[in-house]
Image (cartoon, rainbow, N blue to C red; front, side, top):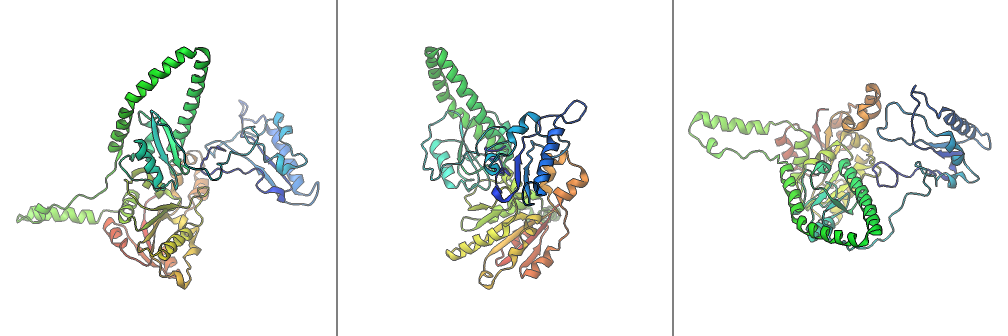
Length: 469
């Protein structure tokens, strides 16, 4: 997963430089014997012995060593051994281990992951016959403009800032299974929240490369026939383009989610027949008392936020729910993902709120996050006096732990006790007491009506929404 922009992946070999006594970047495990034993056990033991000797000062002062142990997905469950013996010599540290090892990748290729050139300017894109625009984190309104100018379907993540316009595709998390999916135009930003979109993007790129190789081979053998075939394909593509866009828009309309509560029964409420009037009143009361789900929570926050406001998503389960169901709206959206960590979420939101105030803005900054993301940055709630006039709402979906991991691949292969302790990390923090300790207003709401009302308040406010695991 290195060098392809995969979430939670960075280039680790050599990252500690000369601060370690020894370092090695092992390849991914490559299999086990039929009896379950590892054919690489001896090589792995040799690496362990070498690392231990280096850490204990065998060739100099004692100190840390760095062993980088990559795995393929899923990152749990039984694992085969590492390092075929034939590869050990090529990976052993030379005179400059910090340099030589950092240039060896786990797949055996040399060199660091390719970096995007600095100062990359505007690009001129050809009008491909089967093209969609994919807008990742921080792509911004220019991605929507690109889709508009090219008359291409727009797949925009919720954190892209490009989730609006008439070309927007709803329900894009099911995109790889859609018929008619073709080439993708990455309009900017990393694809973060949508793991299926990232997989589809990589698959489309691989298919395009295979097609390019086949076309090159065809031209080399029969150039005349290749030219005729290309002309036929171009004509077919021109005819197919409107049909392809129509397929995307029809799929988009079918996937759209509308969580708007039904309009009041005006006739029933005004009826002189007691049974009809009571039925209409009962229906209204039921709507007001509807318990909040994750879908209703993200929908309410999205509907309450407008272009003069600011909205930030934490790296929690809620951002995935929002990415899957929310409609288009031109709202300034922020996300502090890094390598998909949750540190610093509250601090970043406070900075956004301060910048909005200092620029003369009158809107509210809302940050939607999970309980663990709040607790990882709880110290940020301690504000100096000049910052206590900010208009910021922290909306916490509290399900008592990291339920985002319940739906990931790791949950299917991890021991239940380890899953609870290491991944779910259950907590029972009194968020109301926490808010009081830092001088924030606190409100706990469990219904859509209560949340809609809480979202109209200003000041420093924590809105806690209890959610089931």
